[in-house]
Amino acid sequence: MKILVTGAKGFVGKNLCAQLNNIREGKTKCYGDLTVSVVYEYDLDNTQEELERFCSTCDFVFNLAGVNRPRSIEEFMQGNFGFASTLLDTLKKYNNTCPVMLSSSIQATLAGRFGTSEYGKSKKAGEELFFDYGKETGAKVLVYRFPNLYGKWCRPNYNSVVATFCNSIANDQPIQVNDPNLDMELLYIDDLVQEMIDALKGNEHHCEFDGVDTVMKLDGRYCAAPITHHVKLGEIVELLYKFAEMPKTLMIPEIPVDSFAKRLYSTYLSYLPKEKIIFDLKMNVDQRGSFTELIHTSKCGQISVNISKPGITKGQHWHNSKWEQFIVVSGHGLIQLRKEGTSEVLNYEVCGDKIQSVIMLPGYTHNIINLSETEDLVTLMFCNEIFDIQRPDTFFDPVEK
Image (cartoon, rainbow, N blue to C red; front, top):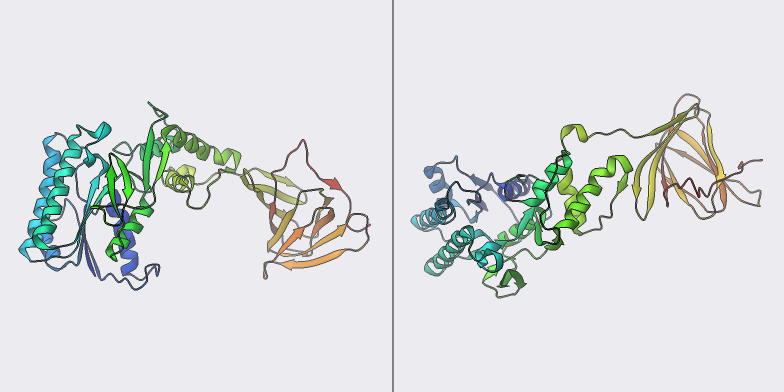
């Protein structure tokens, strides 16, 4: 397929074109038998001649071009209605009735706080233009009313509060929250791109609108991405400040699969300045080597790295409830366990050439010995709880007596 993307240098356009080019170049196999031969990327710096060439041969059009922050109100109509007219007229000129998608906005509902929105009026006019075009030509028309969008590459201090807050907090700049209880419907860019590719395959999702609320409906006039999240502005800010504290606390907030928090964390990280991409960790160093905590979690413990110098034995203790996993990633070592009150010693020889995980069982004293005379032993260690100096649950007892 030959795909035309207008507004290709915008937030949605860049993300969509990147994935379409991944498909074109065979870098992803996630979309079955979908093939993309050409991605025509059109934006303000392209010529009318290029638009005509693209429109004459394309098999699908994603019209993402539009004006969000004009210098005058009149530019809303010029940018959101005027270019749509030019695009459709060009397709008609070449009798190209391929499917066309229009990116509109929830403001086009002209409901609630959007009742007098000039931007919404221009988007509504563009919608009707597309629907009329579909009736006239028989072309398949897909009109999407986007809610608030967020994700990587979204421009801060423009028209996305999430992008603005992510950028400001990542760069230690102040933010202003006028209404922390403001409920926002948010659509993540990767979920939107997935829907765009579903539409390309003819599997778009349809909807109607009850005021500003999206109601999924198989025969709906409009289209919508099926995955959005309703989140209060104050909750977003609270999460972002937790993310910002991670290099100090090592605490990874809860980011369950398919959660808003998971998507927001990825978004926040994309705004980190270069000096914050790297940060120091506290290494506890002595003559035996070092021990460094890497990551803490609120419910699932912590991950650390232990480095033992040649011939060194570490551990020689047991826990009541705490349990650990030792994973040697470099070097040659011996892990020993002995159940308290017994004499049998369990021996597990491990090395970085064959990575294995050894469980330190509750009630078993254990150690780890570097068997090499020349190389450090590097071990990743998972513990099911964060170390609490007030209740360490750690009791000295040599494995071998």
